[in-house]
Image 1 (tube, one colour):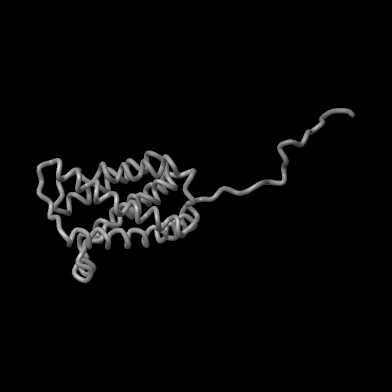
Image 2 (cartoon, rainbow, N blue to C red; image 1 turned 180 degrees about the vertical axis):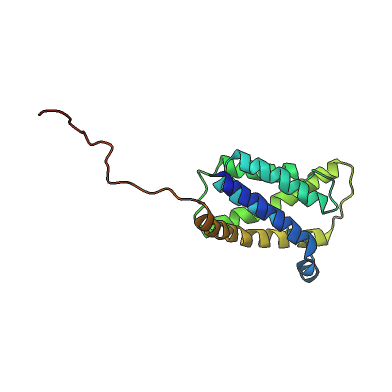
Length: 183
């Protein structure tokens, strides 16, 4: 894809992290913090290349950690692993099917917090575990799965508005032979 596509993904990631940190209404109503970066990573892994996945993991993870109680940089590795697995197997994934997008988004939205939890436990931190963690994981999984098709529609619309599309075939055929001179 183009560099504008990557820049759009990074800009949306910044807005998503800012939205998650400042809007507390969902957190109060649902009793869980919504994390949308794993579902955005699914979109980046299916439509972008390795530089896009790496840039989103680093920037998104550091932005998320700087505005949360996490250790700085702890979210980078789980986001990168989610993105690299999806990017590696994107030829096998039905990325145009909404159900497949939802299932993969839900899986990534559950896997990234679990990997972060494993890293937090290994860094001598004492994360809050209990029944509320299961509820929070369930909410993050469902909302992440529902948001993944939204990313595909949003970026499809943005790409149609902002990214230059090359023209299709011309009337000149490349296999046509042009004879010059006398016949």
